[in-house]
Amino acid sequence: MTATVETTRASVNGVALHAPGETLAAEVLRQRACTELLRQAAQRAGLLAADDPAPIDGATSEAATAAIEALLAAEVNVPEPSDEACRRHYAAHESSYRVGDRAHVRHVLFAVTPGVDVRLLRDRAEGALLDVRCHRDGEEDRFAAVAAELSNCPSGAQGGDLGWLTRDDCAPEFARELFAGPEIGVLPRLVHSRFGLHVVDVMAREAGHMPAFESVRGAVALALRQQTFVTALRQYLQLLAGEAAIEGVQLDSADTPLVQ
Image (cartoon, rainbow, N blue to C red):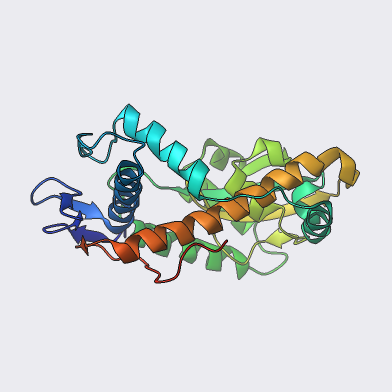
């Protein structure tokens, strides 16, 4: 179940992050606090007018959004990765760049819908995973039976069979789990996606091929820049949090400046 926080005093330097008495998910509250830290930093840097209105329901003004982008461009240093760094990343993440991989997959979907009790849904999904992993060879096709009975996907009528899938056929988070390794059979863990929780059976795989480094160098460099940006942004937010008066929300803070 999603954690919530009673935000009776949540604020950043006296600016409230919520409506009076509002209850927010903890992650939403942290996101609002981080945005407010950046908005105020943009004001101090002269990138945003001092009378810019405080966000309503977490939505900043267009001017504040543009000012935050300018602030990050100036304060969060993202150097261009070297060719050597790109080659190391490419070699260490072959599964991310290999093309043409296919897997014959079936699944049982436990959909996350508004109002659903996620804890109970997870319990049902884990029970189904245990059920299909413990059936004996030669018995009925238990996976197909469970899919027909429990799956929230139309594929349940076909025993959960999704056919042959490539990375491009799946939601990115589903593809990362599906193509993370060479496993065949029912995966020993639930797979999470934007649609819910999946019990996944990989019936067969066909390996693709690794493209030449030169053909994917741009994608490799982009991945490294994104990693560097996330790390640098986290450090910058820690610095801002360490200098701010924050109430009602827990954020990391740092007494040392952003790594140069």
